[in-house]
Image 1 (cartoon, rainbow, N blue to C red):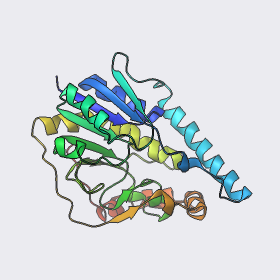
Image 2: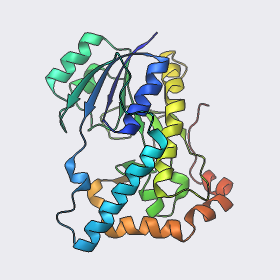
Image 3: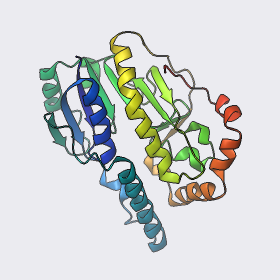
Length: 265
């Protein structure tokens, strides 16, 4: 059985993915890195915007719990190392990983991986990116498609990691099964749930050399969290209320063809 290491964060969604990996592989080590506290910081916002933002994150947590409440801890028996934000690229982390001698390192929800870790394990680091590259790269890449009314671009990309963020060779991509009744946060959680089922299969194909990845040639859009203003966040909710999902589902086949994806399943 292949040895893998999982580099991630510590929310329910991350524990869910860890559970899926542990069912298929010899999961030797989980390294968690805390998220930046800036993500939910509302100190610079008006009272109205702060209340709206707080409500948004509360709804996100409730939706995540509804999908992944069974995963309150990481798999038993797997060594866990907990890090503060932006501590994933230290020599200490590299030394810990080297002792395991993993066949693959899987990423989901960490800071950007840099050298010497990236160089040491070139071609063996696989990222689960929540978004369809190259159309949406960077942060909040299943939220910005709602803001810009491009529901076809909601999904996940499993790719080999290189020095360019979210631009490594694509192994596999997926879109979730969206329904009219879905709320904003359901969209992202459906992507994660489906990714957990497909990710282990794709990793094994890469280990077996049945998949080497497709080079990304398009530039696409790159977003950072600083781009996500309160007004844009409101727009996401407004678009859902105005029927963005209904409109997408009515023209799904034609719209999806405008944004082709790479699938192995």
